[in-house]
Length: 130
View (cartoon, rainbow, N blue to C red):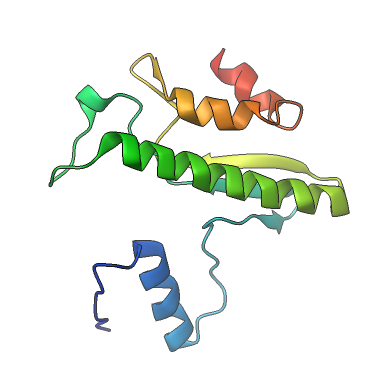
């Protein structure tokens, strides 16, 4: 069992990445404000957040607007990185998210707004949820 110190100021992804680095694990990559070329695709994404504040389920109070804005910016950063990779290799971009952009009939509009900024590259995802 390995123990790591938790710095509450750090994002979980950063904490886990630092732990993997300390342990010399190089076979896992974190999708965090970036994108990767994987096989025939370019993978982009972010955690996302609940699509509806009323259904937000958290152990502690959470600032819905702040979290939604942060995750939308992270998705945009990841898609920008994916677009740069696509310009180099021409592969299709796919997006992965922990929280789906549509849940119980409610769209996460901020997420779709970010994906629509580059609609040509995101046509499959957008069509799936129209």
